[in-house]
Amino acid sequence: MKRRHFVGFSLLFVASCSTTVNQSNRSSSNLTVSEPETLEFAVTDIQGAEELQQNYQAFRTVLGEVLEKEIELFPVDNYIAAAVALQSGQLKLALTGPSEYVIMRARTNAVPIMAITRPDYHSIIAVRANSEIKSASQLKGKTIAMWEVGATSGHLGPSKLLLEAGLNPQSDFKILMLGKKGLQALKKGEVDALGIGATRYQDLLKSDGLSESEFRLIATGQPLPNDLLVASSNLPTAVVEKMRDRLIKNQDKLIEALLVGQANAKYKGAKMMAANDTDYNMIREVYKAIGQGNVF
Image 1: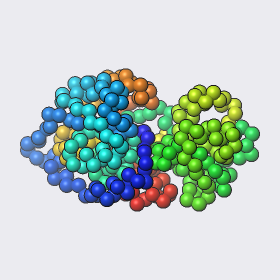
Image 2 (image 1 turned 30 degrees about the vertical axis):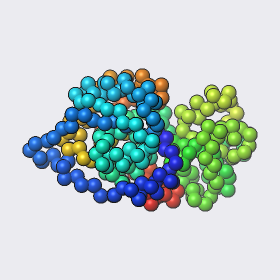
Image 3 (image 1 turned 120 degrees about the vertical axis):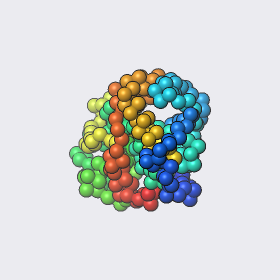
Image 4 (image 1 turned 135 degrees about the vertical axis):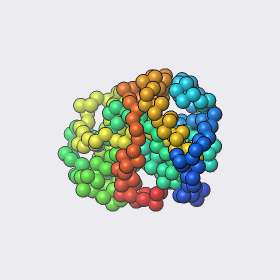
C-alpha cells in the first residue's frame, strides 16, 4: 500500500497523537463486553468516498455478513487521518500497508487483527542490461530511482537490499523518488539503478512498452510483511478475537469480495492469517537505518 507525504504527515502525527493509549476497556476479564453495532472501516491508501465505494463496496457487504455488523465506509485522506480516527474511537477498522502499520501502531497502539498476504510482494533492484554494475554493493556513489518515500516495496524494501549489501542509505548513494518515471529514467541513463516492487516493475515494463531484456536484476528481496486489517485499541479484546476467528473461517469469500475492486488486483491469490506485530520489525529496522527512527 502507498504512503503519501511521509515527512510532513509524520511530523503532524507526532504533534497530534499520544504514544500512550488507555486500553483498560479492552480487558478480556470484563464480565460484560460491549459490542458496537456499527464498525467504521477505512482503507489508508484510498482517497475519497467515491473511490472507496467503487473498490470496497463488495468487501463491505461481505464483511458485514461475516461479522454480523453494520459496516460503514469511512473515507480518509491518508494513514495519518486514519490513525487519529482510530485513536479517538471514531474509526474501528482499517486496512493498511506494512509501513503505515508500524507508525500507526507506535502512535495509537492499533491492534493487528488479520494479515492479508500479497503474492510476489518483494523488492528488486534493476540496472540496464549493458551496465557494468553486477551487484548491489557496487551502487556506492551511484544514483538510484525509487518509488516514493516510505513505500514498502518501492523504498523500504530496496533500502534493505542495499543495507544487506553493506551500504549506508544515509551516505553511500543518492535516491531520487521518481514514481512511475523511474524505469524510463533508468533506460535513459538518468539513474544507475531502480529499486522497486517486483509486481510494479512488471506493470511498468508493460505500460512503458519495454522489454525485460533491456534490464538486469542485481538483487531480489525476500517476501515483504503483509498488509493488515487493524482495529482501534478502544475495542474490547474479546470483540477483536471474535472478529479474527470469523475472518479466518470466511477468508475465501472475503478475498473474493476484495477482488471485485479494480484497485485490488494485488490480492489475487491472497490468504488471510493471524497477524503478529513482530513480523513488522524489519520495517522498523529499515526506518531507523534511513534516519527515520524518530517516527516511533
